[in-house]
Amino acid sequence: MAEHSNGRSPAGMWVFPQADQITAQVMERTTRRCKPHTIALVVAALLAALGVVGFLFRVAADGLDNYNAWGYYMAAFSFVFMVTSGAPLATAAFRFTKSHWRRPLSRVAELFAVVGVLNLLLFIPMVIVLPAIENPTFVPGMEGEMAARRAIWLGSSGVPFGAPALWDILGLVALAVTSMAILWLSLMPDLAQSRDRVSGFRRTIYGLLAGSWHGTKRQWIQHKAGMMLLGGFYFMMVVFVHFLIVSDFAMSLIPGWKDSILPPLYTLIAFQNALGLLLVILFILRKWGGYQEYIGISLFWSASKILLGLTLLWTYHLFAFFITFWYGRLEVEESILRYLMFESYAPVFWANVIFSFFVPFFILLWNPVRKTAWGPALAGLSALVGGFLFSIRIFVGSFNAVDFKEFPGELYSLGLTRARIQDAVIPDLWDIFMVVGIIGAAALVYLAAAKLFPVMSIWEVKEGAMYQRMGKLFRGEYMILAKPE
Image (cartoon, one colour):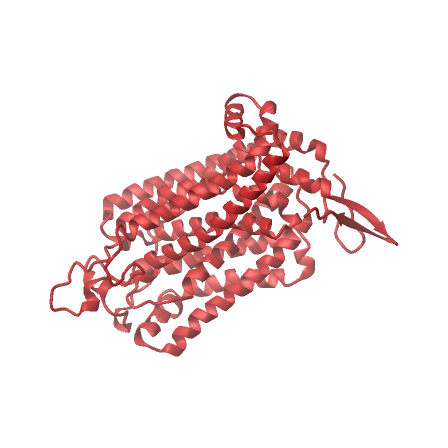
């Protein structure tokens, strides 16, 4: 590795790994035993076990017919789903823009595809607890609008077949399959050149997944086209599935909540949180994981600008949501503002604003801080806390806006009134167990995948190493980057 500073950029801004040594170095780090990684796996497994305990006790206490009791489970699922579904989107977007700095980030993001399978399993209880669209208390003679819960699935011909459960599950299946295909296609060149360097179970897996890859020109052309097509399809799918989740499990559970801003805000938060988590992971890999010669500060500097833009977009969408309801001034709109922002969940809302906007904004505002590894990572960690608070505010609030067990008909009423605004729900022990368990299960799956497969995209890092070198112009020293496309 060679580090350079021209007096204006900090040392370590650009890194220059040796192309002929990358495969051996990355595989050595992947296969060796690492005590911190083992400890992290054990801790994640213990947290996941707590989640199982909390889930079983919650089922025993409340069953699956009262959705009010499952608000914190849904909030934890939403948080994990947002982050892990947004990560593959990040790497696809940066590939589309041909960003050179994103090469060490790609595999770190793609490995979150394995958590997509876990998301599908975690989502099944939520499909079961979701109330039916048809009003069970509806009788002939009542107002026709009270016959069903307001949802995106209602049309002139009634509720589509299998809606919403079938289509929500199919959406998550499509996301999981597409992200796994992206991961497999990206891994194929690495596994083909690494299968002779490993043994045992890992060698068998590498051989099966590498298939007949030999690195011919035709294969590389097909590989590139496949990555682009899958990335584009994933981008379309993830936006649509986010729309389904936030519509069915948030807006449709608060009577009278009609909002066109929340679905794009949900996707924006997913991208902000995913990029924030990727920066945290990359900081850990650079600082303690032994990948300093692959992860330069230029990655954090470039990604911080995108994270800052996403933070500002978050503020814009929040203001658009607020101003529409504020000037509408219908009773239901005032009630929703009071419930989710200014009365019941006011502390969570203001904490959400602080961690999602103010903290990352003031960290990323300063260019000297952006030119470090720790600054963007700290801003990303703050965004993650904000995203977690957002999921609690939206989904716990939605799941408890109506006391469904005592007054099931209120869920199908024309709108939330001020007289029916519920208090905020404080988590009990089982809620806490489920929240930490879901997050721990996601971490366990990711850590296991990061130990099985190389966390650096060998072929991309090697390609980037051959495109760059340092050169002099007059008295300065600058990086020269080739642009083959």
